[in-house]
Length: 637
Image (tube, rainbow, N blue to C red):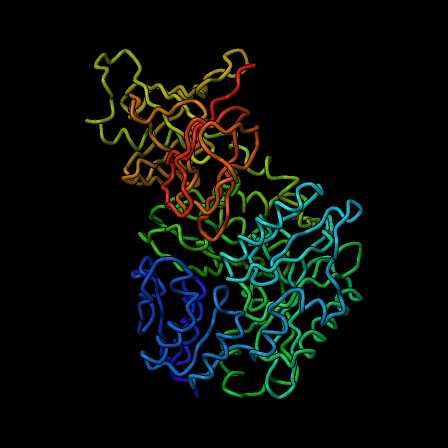
């Protein structure tokens, strides 16, 4: 019997495994890097062992240190979670060689499926050889790992060599393996996967399908089970192919077989020899605890001959600290508050007040809704996210809500190109930001001593400016005091065309209640309540809206020369364009600098054609958000 489990991972998955272990009376052991010393998974574990360093390569990817930590803490089993070493056969062997129980598949099965090229060979599929124009578009893909890293879609043959190099560099950094391959890119396909579970007695469970088509940068955003619109014949084919993959490598434990479905045909992608991020939707539909079953299988117990029958529908949304409107750039800072109402499941590795750093994945939490029907589950999840309090860095919460309510998604007509088609619309600014602005102003009015600004003539209006986050729109608010806190408010968007956009006059708004954390307004006879929270970073959160109050005067030191390229997020400079230096000629859109942040690579491109007059980015240098990387002087026409 297993008595103590070390989770060779961090964050949300570590907390999730610990939860099941606690329920079964199993002692838990965490490992942590230096930035994670006070992380939630460390606080929740019974014991914790430090892995000195900050980067994944120095800590969570060090198999020797993780095995030593398990032995030092007296653990008798290791759960790999997902990511990091979870699909590393050498790590699995190191665990068992140390006399510990490995809560995962046999190393030989991991090895057989770890390389996507070898997995395809097992399924009778060969990758592309020499690529010609007739093969386009193609997908460059890392042979190891997952999570969308080391993947590039290539539509022009001239781009292939550069994309191969970029994918190799990213794969080597993320997985320690730079092998990549090329396969046909299926346009308009759906990402459908099958959850499998196998014991050491020859029993294989096929636990239905999941649809994971809504993806950004080849990383999943919204998942659901069962996959909608899959007919009985195609479903049976997917189940049979998944079972064949399991039996072909004598698989044991939990795993996922992934497919791309297009025109009613299933194209095998890969097998993930671990628990998936989206496993909660399968748990909800089948009423199972997959981690508990992993523990049972590792202890040698047999599964029942057949799995339980599925019931209802489940949908999961991944909440990321990122700005979808800025190319999904990761965000850092303090997560002041995270609270999701309703009867939904929240899996997270953060709690109120935790810092969000640059070293690891940007996912804050997974929110899961289960209901008798797909429509009910989607509605419940969208409502819970809309009402959630997510205070801190910019997140993709609004994108999630809008995606769940998009007619293409509600009708189950989505595919992997969903965000390519709809991202601009889904990230457009809210049409009516004025009520939150009025609520923020009313909240500020409770502190009269600092509210009135520099004017002291009661008959003249005062002024304030707010920036809408993350849409970066500035609103100028003019107001006068009255007996009900605010007598008149006029709001105008900065730079608005006066002929087409008139100031929004909300003089008729009555302030029924104004306090630091709660404002009640009467707007056109309708009572609206706003939860308001202000933090030291200058941001004010009003229900789902985020505003930043702007200073009255600009700090001259913050001004930058035209053409300045600033770091959009904190990260590490991993590449600089070959031959780039001061005086070099650049063209608009040319990639100049590559930053790595939160396990993702981001390109900094030239804003215009011209001359590089300054270059401050050096490979290996860590930069903060807003740091000056380079300056491009635009050529004069």
